[in-house]
Every structure is written in C-alpha cells, then in structure tokens.
Image 1 (cartoon, rainbow, N blue to C red):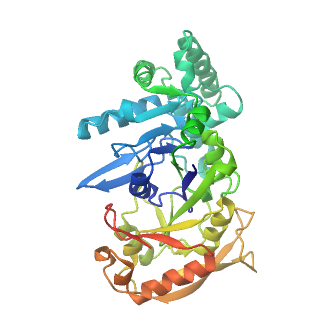
Image 2 (cartoon, helix red, strand yellow):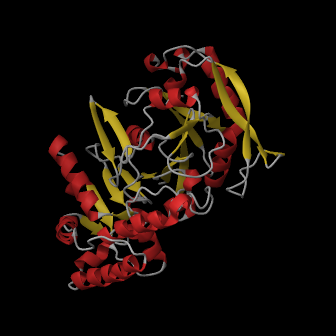
Length: 420
C-alpha cells in the first residue's frame, strides 16, 4: 500500500485540517510527520469548530488511527490541554486513537522562553516566531542535546530534564532575559505522566508494518514556502515541510509515496515577516482578510493577504511532486469585479518566472486578470453548478501549473466540497 501526503503549498494556513478530515474517510491511518503546536488546523462540522495543534486531523474519525510522527516536536503541556479539550467536548477516547513516536522531540517550557528571548534580541530583524519553542527545540535536536518522547520512560528522566533545562537557563542568562525558568516544571511533569497513557511506538517499524496491508494519509504542518531548505529563508520554519519531510518524519522510503495532495487558497496569505510579492496593502487586501476570516487559528494574529501567486505555487508543486491540487476558500472571491493572479515577476528590474534565491530582492508581481463570477459558490455541490467565469479561472491555473485541480472547497464545512 501507499503513503499519500497532504501538503500546504503556500505560507501555511491553507486549510489542510478540513481536507485531511474529508479524506480521512478513505484512510484507516492519519499521520502527522513534522512541525509543532503553532500549526493550528481548523475543522468545522456538525455546527462545531475545533483547532488542532499537534493532534492529527483524523482524530474525529471513529475508525482512524492517528500517529504523531518522529519528525514532530511535541509540547506535552499543549498536547495534554488539546486532548483534554477534545475529550471534554466530544467524549472521544484520545488515548485509544493516537499513538506517539518515541523519536519525536519534546518542547520544554524553557524552549519557549528561549524562543521569546531570541525574538526579542533580533529587534527589527525578527522573523515573526509564534513563540511556541519550536525553533529552539529543533536546534537542540540538530545539535544533539534534545530530549525525545521515548526518554520519558527512562528512570532518570527527571535528571535528563534538569540537565537540558540548566543548559537553557545558562543561555537565557547570557541573553539577559528575565524569567522564571521553573514556573511550569510541575505542569510539565504532570503532562509527561499523561503522555505515558498513550502507546509510544518505534514509528518507522510501526508505519512500515501498517503499509503492508493498509494505506496511510500523511499530514504536513505549515506551508511549503516555509520549508527550512526551499522556503523564503530565513523567514521559514525549522523543519522540512515539503513531501520529502514525510519520508524522514515517519521513517518510510520514497518508493512508498503515492498521491501527493497539494493544497492552496484561491488567494495568498502569510503570517509573520518575510517576502510576499502579491501582498495587498489597500482595501482589497482588507476585504480578503475580512471575508476569509484571516486570523491565526492559534495566535489570533491578522494574516497578510494578497492575490494568488502562481509562480510560487508552481515552485512548490515542483519541489514536492504534487499529483493532485486542492483549492480552498474559492467562495471568498465571489464578490470581486476582477480577480488577479501573479504569473511572473520583475526581480531587481529583470523579468523572471522563477522564485528568486535572494529573499531581500525587489520582487514585483506581473498579473493576469480575470472577470469575477459574482456567484455565491457556497451553494454549489457539483462542478456543473459552478459559473463559467470560475471554470475559466480553474482551467487557466491547471494549464499554468500542469497539475489537475481535483477538489474545490467552497466553504468551511465538510459538505462544502466539490470532488472533480
């Protein structure tokens, strides 16, 4: 069987949670392969709304097993709160539906303090961290100082925790960051005990055994343009958000990858600092933000908004080998007279159809314009109901990107989805 992958192709917040929830019906297993608790996947169904930070989006499917993979960085405190909230609202037995990779790294409270200290020290050059401790945790992972989920089973875990915490305290003092590094020790240890209620697995063996007989849907966090290697560095996250991250984050080989579902919005958004060629600073940008409710699911921060960037999108499609495209929030453009899409750039005065290496280059978008459709798409449930202007918009994108758009979302609910 194959590992199918769901990826965000922009700067995050593309609506991955809804799509994984919709697709999960076809998969007995859903696996999260990278990222941390700043990735708020919003799900809406049966008149209820949920924001998932670390829990895979298949949690609401009764017959689906959910894996927190070894590429994830897990905050026990946040994870416990998330599980408690879901259990209280739904009665879902989270400990029976979720397994956790032993090799996933732990976010300590002092990782979050380091995140805040680093961001404060950068001043105007800050990258816009969500301050969840993700960057410092991946830093400890790469520098071989980190603690992993499997370590909580060791009899000397408290000593290991104190050793890493003391390392962080030294760094915080060197940066002159005032804080109480022990304020959350008791809550952290309580959350660690909570983790012990879950099945802790050797993810690579666990996943490969499942793939002998069943398919798995792998779920990415953040967006492709925030990839540590291929995103708009240094304004990126600290993990591999492209399809390659699914292999590393779950312990599978590239031959086992099947469909690669790439998700994008009908427009673009971005949170935090960094280049955003199509960003709008006018009333149109404000209107997109208002209609699309573009505020962070976890942080509440207003998102930067702009027209769809097909140059960046084609770049992300190429990097991950996307086989199927999924367009979200199509209905948010229902009222616009003219729809614009960026089809090339002027980079430092020169025409280009490629995403530039230089993050700080002067990037001016070149647009292709389309007539708006002035139709309420939220009532459409079949492709035949879609207006011709919208179909023309879809056809142009498919020709430019060279990949079919298989799913169109016309609203936040599960049912507001058109399968092509």
